[in-house]
Image (cartoon, protein in one colour):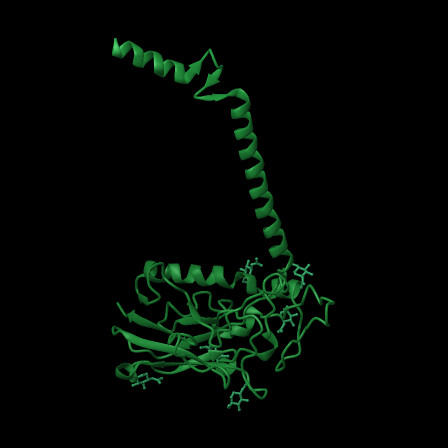
Length: 284
Ligand SMILES: *[C@@H]1O[C@H](CO)[C@@H](O)[C@H](O)[C@H]1NC(C)=O
Ligand SMILES: *[C@@H]1O[C@H](CO)[C@@H](O)[C@H](O)[C@H]1NC(C)=O
Ligand SMILES: *[C@@H]1O[C@H](CO)[C@@H](O)[C@H](O)[C@H]1NC(C)=O
Ligand SMILES: *[C@@H]1O[C@H](CO)[C@@H](O)[C@H](O)[C@H]1NC(C)=O
Ligand SMILES: *[C@@H]1O[C@H](CO)[C@@H](O)[C@H](O)[C@H]1NC(C)=O
Ligand SMILES: *[C@@H]1O[C@H](CO)[C@@H](O)[C@H](O)[C@H]1NC(C)=O
């Protein structure tokens, strides 16, 4: 008996034909609830859209609004293996250095002289290429300077398509990460790269040669105005060729950028402005 009554109560709760209530509410009550939530969510969506719109209005497509002014840009080397940045190969085994050649070929492709001539300007060297906006008048798009592959001479892969890997005199290419607005160097002195061995390896590194001469990043490639403003920007490169490195031994190398206004390795990031890697060439 009690069971039947309960069952009837439950059924009545779902649909009460007497009061015409569904789950305890009339149709108009349900309608009001749905209407309330509908209006509420439309209001929330509208508020979100308005906030986004206002925020986006304050952004400038061509310049970051907030920039972490990192005074010491990071440096990277090419070729770089998939897991480590160490370069280890055997001269006799082509397959151990073949990928390095491919990486360099691919990396240098956009620097082909013909492509650079098409995309970029021949700038006046040894001075900053300044293209500031004047007040609200945008000086966009901004031009960029040519960095020709051929300026890497014996590391350009043009005369020696193997970048010296086959005769144990490999080239390593160094670039400095882009920092918007950075004007490296000081008093007309361009920043330059120097590489050396870690102390215990100092007698193994042998003679080095840098391209362009002195390993400089010419001032004309700075300041950089950002991807949107300077669409064709080509980061300048420095190549280092190891002319007489000791074979069959690990040689720990560190390359760093020298510029009066780039402190080597700030407190925040001791690897900024420098890059370290191991080079080992096996002669067999
Ligand atoms: C770039 O230059 C190299 C060497 O001259 C050539 O083999 C290659 O086809 C060129 N690539 C393009 C895209 O021009
Ligand atoms: C780059 O190469 C092109 C084509 O050979 C040449 O016209 C141009 O003068 C070179 N630019 C620089 C900066 O050397
Ligand atoms: C970028 O390069 C293209 C050719 O690839 C050229 O037509 C264009 O004018 C260049 N733009 C700027 C801003 O240098
Ligand atoms: C390039 O290599 C050749 C042969 O090793 C050498 O004679 C020449 O001086 C090198 N060029 C430069 C600019 O270092
Ligand atoms: C390289 O540096 C030396 C000494 O600092 C300087 O005399 C020479 O002119 C520089 N060469 C180039 C091409 O900048
Ligand atoms: C190459 O380095 C070795 C020492 O590792 C040295 O004995 C030799 O004279 C160097 N060769 C040249 C051409 O500098």
